[in-house]
Image 1 (tube, rainbow, N blue to C red):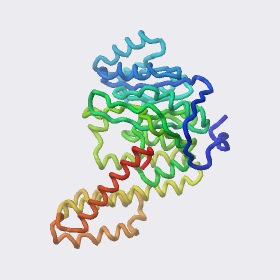
Image 2 (cartoon, rainbow, N blue to C red):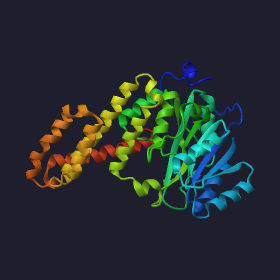
Image 3 (cartoon, helix red, strand yellow):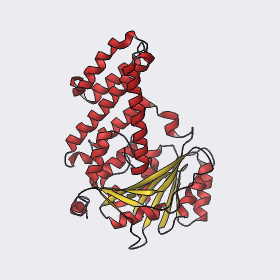
Image 4 (cartoon, rainbow, N blue to C red):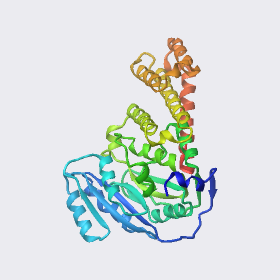
Length: 369
């Protein structure tokens, strides 16, 4: 049965329900662990998968031509555990190809993408597969990740209080309205048959995971687990995002995610053109907000402000006719006063900080901004 044929089985509106304890069968889950020079973390990542209950687990380690002891450790883990296999890359291909190569070998009904420096919390796969079994139209399940910089691990919550299930296009619409990614990565469980139909990770440098979540939502329903922490995500200075991603690059990568999304299979989904326009307008307004903040902080230094204005116009040409654009270009008249003394600039910064804090709190409670 194709994804399109399952449309009649999908939820018609967002619902929130209490978790059921009824499990129809023991599901199988394949966890793909991409590893590049993370030997010091790999064993813990694998063990967090092997210790999962209520599921049959298959672990596929993809060593992406590591130069440390990762390959030797992966070989040892494969010998120790019959459900751990290894894919060896002779050259470093990056996280996208590493995951895709492992995913194509997967045999489980469900699939998890886990970086070698992250871990699953106890019961994570059981909680996620239970909601996927209860709602066959759901192709993407996620929950709350615990971010931590170093050991000891923060104590996770292990009891799901509720489930929220969205029609996939409704969840996608909300992401186009916010322009932001609400998922880290290790807290996600996917239906493998859906990936085989709509494709694996796209070759984006930093937003490949975001684009995949959006694409899955275009073709299936989305579920969120309330009350439980589904994964530990390690924040450290050697991670790819910490080393390479700044504010400008993050914006460009999110824009690229929407470009790839709406140039692929999702382009044929209902209201795709309207969703694309919404996403671009949202990002253009965000770029104007950055330009306004640059003006408020450094009125005599306009280089970064010009960059953000150019990004806004390149993202949505119609933004130049908006009230936000007009107000921003009137703002330089205030530059006769030092930036800290301009009340409007101060109020703008305060509003922005309050908005960010409220969004962060909402994300912790609901999984969305």
